[in-house]
Length: 481
Image 1 (cartoon, one colour):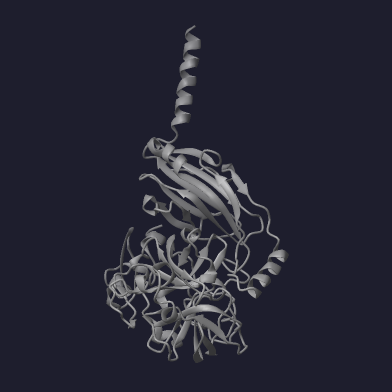
Image 2 (cartoon, rainbow, N blue to C red):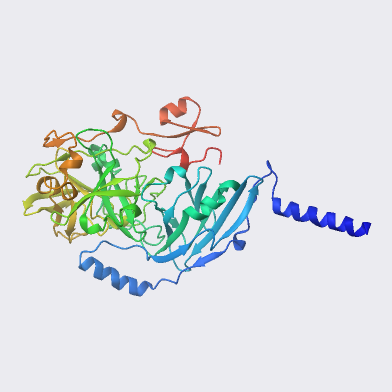
């Protein structure tokens, strides 16, 4: 009898220890990757996708870089829960496609509790997207993630024990999007034709205030275009983002936009060189997810959407000025051809033709993925956004930019720009680019030990810190990590 009681006590103690997991203060040890359940989607048919891409380009549809697969995954139906410590639990899931080049996911329902955080990594854990928190809960209730390289992504959500039920109720992964070209493509990422000019080249120096306002974005996890952050007459940094109507931002897709800032090469690749025609070294770690469409019109091919949050101030994003004039002096086009590193092109001629600016290029060209990017006049003001055309290296074909600032200025708020870009009713014919903070040297993350703050490279060096780079944020650069 006594022996039975002793055995029972030992068994109960063992079970209690197993259920409790690591005690408070012990090191968090993650489950082995192969223990985490894997949800897979079918392999991609690259040959068929190539044919579809040619058709999309021929018919004027926005370019595609990934394939969406609808899902209905929640922390109650898939993945695995583990105890991190006495007060915290973690849900983990792997999603994969064997022959994909990149992965991203969309959450049709995203409502993290205050204690919650979510990270997305590649299969190795080396490539990590900054933690998402309750601050990323938006009124539209969705969250779409940036891309990670490779054919597998790992999702981890950590919450307090008391909030597990809320996380289960508030999270549903509804789209797995394996990529097949351009983004994180080791063979062809950044190969946007050799005649194009990196924005860090000397030719881009006069445009340093406008360059940070231009960005590449993904939509619904599988489409990509370019766009530009726009200033307004209140000069209040409302994050209005101008792109092309044909890129597909609508009232039903606007929440899925992921805008990538400062995706550009770190050095000037000589135009015309094999280096310029090859892969760049830009990254995708500065992003803004989600938006609300404000106005759109197929005539002049424009869409204006308001991003769900302002970009991190450390990234140095600016707000481009604009002009409503019916004629335009020679300026520049800034864009992301094929979702590659940011380029700048210079026109030989710009003529108003119906609802478009008819542009013939002198230096540089555009490509699929450049759609929605801005055309600037000689005063550095946006006059339209790229609609269509057939230019590419080395041909001399024309491109066409919608005259949205001129011809789509007035009308109902849902189909014109004046209500949004001139909220003060000033009647302004133009405004200039807004540089938050008034310009000056760019700032970035400065690490002093494990503490991160923002400053210029010079200030960081004076304080004895380690400068992470211009526009690098503390959330994407863990000091001492």
